[in-house]
Image 1: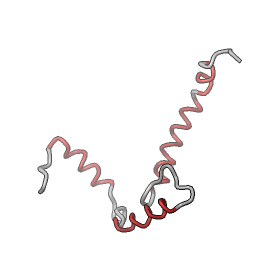
Image 2: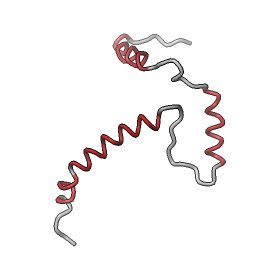
Image 3: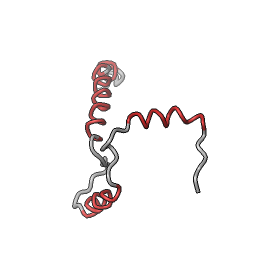
Image 4: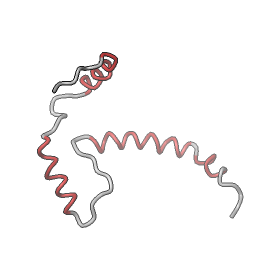
Length: 84
């Protein structure tokens, strides 16, 4: 059964297609072994990324978040109040 694409989502589909470069889509069967390795781990991670470049992508995003949090740190600490 094939779903009928909804036209309003076409810009989102086109944007995603433009971001996907050759070699970005991995072998789905490789995921099986990765999941089994996590299941068998003595201390499995709470969260994990699958695929090349994912950690780098999220490092960039979290770097931006950390910059924002540091920029507002003084205000954040003032919100704690003077209670000791």
